[in-house]
Amino acid sequence: MGDRKLSAIQEIAMNRVRDAESTEPTCPVNERWLTLDGARLRYLHAGSGPAVLLLHGLLGYAFSWRFTIPVLAQQASVYAPDMLGTGFSERPAHLDCSLRASAERVLQFMNELGVASCDLVGTSRGGGVAMFMASIAPERVRRLILVDPINPWSARGKLLSVCLSNRLVAPLFVRLTPHVPMVQDYYFRRLFGDTRRFRPGAAEGYAKPLQLPGAYGYAISVLKTWNRDLRELESLLPSIAHISTLLVWGSLDAAVNPASAFDLKKHFQNCRLVMMEGIGHLPYEEAPEEFTRAVSEFLLRDSAASNGTRSSTTS
Image (cartoon, rainbow, N blue to C red; front, side, top):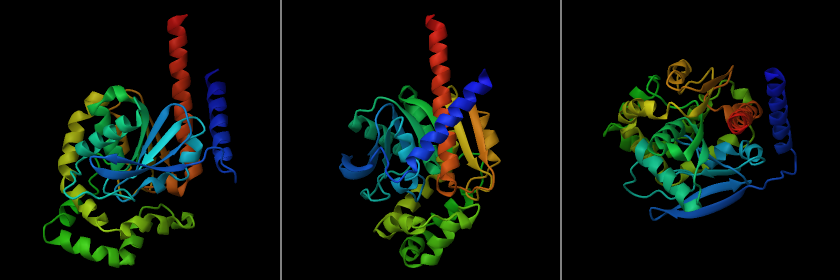
């Protein structure tokens, strides 16, 4: 019975992926804006139903989710913000870019939208923001989906954050990087397990907002609190251990050590790990069909399990 139920869930998830890939999407994606802490924030919205919130990584923005949104929008109301300081949202001066402050802004974003609770998807640094947010307001997070999330057990990034945020290095990095396309291209390529999986327009799409003033200054502000944030993240994990969680990781992730997935998984009571073989740090970019299928399966299966529990309780 369990296998048949799982196969049915997998088939439903695959059908939703196929529908979203059709030439006429049933759920149009709308660009919208709101004011948050006095600054204009851009976000994408599609679909209706239970809320799903998508949080991008350090130098990403809502563009990262262009293959994911149409699939999830067939079963949910999907929101994908450009966090303040990134994408096409405004870049306020002296923005607090710590994980905690970023998480608090996500909660404000939900308040502005009137969203009481959501399924929360976070990738890379967005995964760290998602975990912080769940610790601050666990009643507002139904489930967590963490995609190659930063975590205390991956050394990658810890030394780099110290080097790039150095007071002598940081000004040079901010001033020169926008004018050296090779640096941006190298950074983007190293996030793939196989660069032959580049999608047309992907590199250009990610590069567009990086040409705007303040893009790399935001990155430096994030790096300044990187290691302190990770120490705090480790201390708060017990408070979110009860939340049903899906971990999705690329086995060739060069940014966050795939081995750290197993350390992180131990801190959740109900956690499933999907290790995507041959994939790098951006599974939603490199293998979007497989990624969205895994996410849809998790949401469907977890919902079915919850409904089964409620039925048993009320019968």
